[in-house]
Amino acid sequence: MRLALAVWENRVSPVADSAGQLLLVDIGNTSILGRRYERFQQDSLFYRARRLADLNTKIFICGAVSDFFRSLIEGYGIRIIPFIRGNADDVLQAYLAQSLSNPRFVMVGCPAV
Image (cartoon, rainbow, N blue to C red; front, side, top):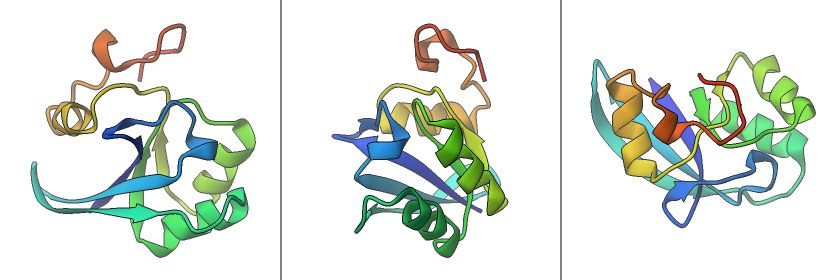
């Protein structure tokens, strides 16, 4: 299963709509099988949502996200986990441990996952 995180300087990007880079992570059972970075080549939200789908993303973890971009992503059948913050590696470990609802990872003023 492939998970993507919108990242900026090894942290979850605060705004998914303008994130320039993804951390793609392949997960098997509860372990990381591989990871790599992928840059978005265009700013268009249509392109970005399509690119996530083309990369076989099943889950997209991000910070804040506009309703429009969220709808585009979900239209490709990708599950989105928004309003997440923190170091990308810590967020990955929290996802694997099913503990993203920890207040440490939830953006201030946003609903818990």
